[in-house]
Length: 507
Image: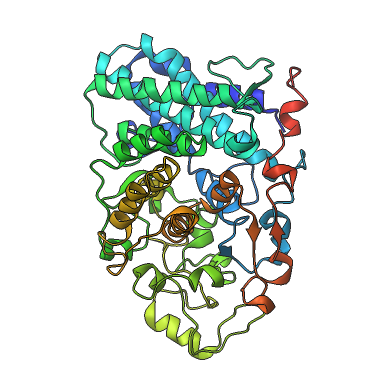
């Protein structure tokens, strides 16, 4: 297989447009990527941004279900976390995080490959767009979008391949390889502080260019200024830069009111009022059985769902207040029989689930605590994939204000998210200190369940993974019922893959 530097180069110079009509490319994402010749005009350069959009929902590396950003959410955010159960003991090495030190593992390599591919294409756009023919406002907007992609990708790489900020000696620890042009030569690792500085610089420039351009995006899958603010907020809270996180979170959610309860129950497959950024999905651009929705959507016809439906942890579910609508998004087994050791529902509970959700596939198993939050719009797994919601921004604001010693501000953000939105009309909080932080963490867990945050949150907080086995009051099968401390497993840092170190002589 090609080393990562050659892969980036080939993706940058490889333009695949022959099978798609131009007007189609202008309306929905395609897999086209960028070459210098495409930047002759800003009209053509829009195709390069369109290609970046599509790269987030393509199949990669020929196996294992790697499907762009959806794989990051499932395999790296949810599977190894604390609150997501799937009865896959044969996947224990993935779910328990055992590949983080295996430099030859495809699971260790995939995020590095994927995000540097996005970075390589974004770098080409940033390098060549200024010389394109076309309105200055178009060049500004396109460059801002590419900068947003690059900042997001570098931030995601640091979450995986670098230490927690709290363990980094104020960023002096190793970050990742910081490539910001179209060269593919040998380069050392930058420090984590240097990578975050680049992320901040890219987002500052992007925000300035978005504003100067005066342009508005046409589609939810196109980055815009709110997306830049949202990336900034997530990066800043991870870096423990709490004033910046609070400010950017408030900016990001501006114009994206929280969805009502009806929209919340609609399946999370199409943009709502609070979706800040997503990836396009449709039946004519499906990944079939390799899509995110084919792995998680409760109504999917894919075997990954029919045989192994995705479930919330019993422990988290039982903490959700009865008055909270999010409790209804999971199958409550109270009063029904199910196989405790596996979670497989008995006939009465299965019938109850099918009565509540008749679109469950007729051949699917039903599990206690299985999820009904996320569904597919079409089979086997079609849907728009959310990346940022205003809900997350309220939670970032709450967390940031807590660490800024602004407990009233933190509580107010929680009230806006939970009570004022109607998610739980009975919600109230007077908590402070550790109890308030625990409450913020709890509402992150139930609000963002299944969307790819669980492991990343536990890592940045330095919180251990503690999964309870079925005989301990939980619902994890024994091989997955593990306790993983923050200092175990290479401190949760994914090592640099051999496909980089074997060819990059500066590492």
